[in-house]
Length: 375
Ligand SMILES: *Cc1c(COP(=O)(O)O)cnc(C)c1O
Image (tube, rainbow, N blue to C red; front, side, top):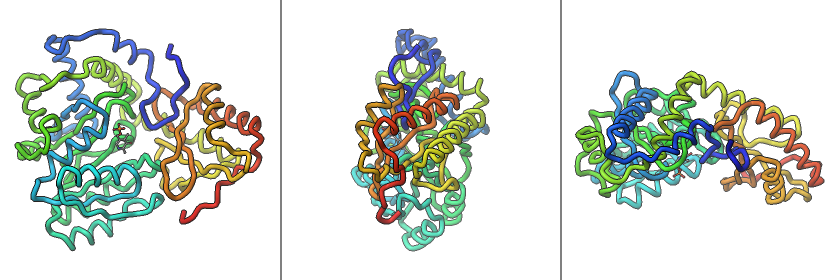
């Protein structure tokens, strides 16, 4: 059994005993059994996006951001340009990464409670023919907002540009199709696939990746090089996170047993429904309307009650077995509760009861949110 509180966070997440047990094996990186494991993980992850085989999974050591940086550097040509749809910290991070590696970036800014607007993307592309690529976040983990990848993909296709998607917090639980004009999707081991942290991956359209030789700004983050080596002899170029890969292999088996993307997504939706109904009934105010809420992470306004004290609330919840997550918003003081990981509706029911006890113990009676500026 795991020790520590249940993680109701955006990752790393609570993992299963079976996944953690898979880490007990020390693989040598040249062990044929480990080579077979890498091939199996790559094939299973790629099939989640695209059963037709047009996409290849290129794993990249590091956290998810390393994979996003590798995707941007490998796909966006030095002489190209990147339009970034921004409506939270992760869209903002894409713009920061691309700027730092010397790509020309145009940001289309939205507020943190507005989904990406396809019409504004179309306008910005029409105004700037030098923009070769568009990047967007699927579930903006800053708020839990679900962005309309399909309608943005339609306008990017019509404009004849290519689309790069950061699907980190949704991949494996929310439907995503490797359709045109998507060239790459970045995700990681430790979110909805429920592996341990330490590995990102980019699902890349093989035909597009083949044209990316020598483009990357970095040797270690060059996805094309990493791919060529994996295709040649099945090996990473540099030390692979062997235990992380073994855990992910086990986690992928459990993902399939749960019914794949639809089964995993269904559990997360049930988690989210129990959580939001429970918090609503207590009187908390959530940031997003249900129509924009992805079943991944829920943002809640901090109560205006003078007795409210986030760090006491947080510490008491940890003592009672649950870790939540601070807010990351500029518009209003908030905290976040994740619905993902080895967490089940019964855990959410227990969580709501523990929250009720904790606010009573703190003496907080008015759960209405702090009056927000622009929200
Ligand atoms: C978690 C996450 C990332 C990657 O974050 P790391 O801390 O590098 O793992 C990137 N984008 C989104 C949308 C995320 O949720």
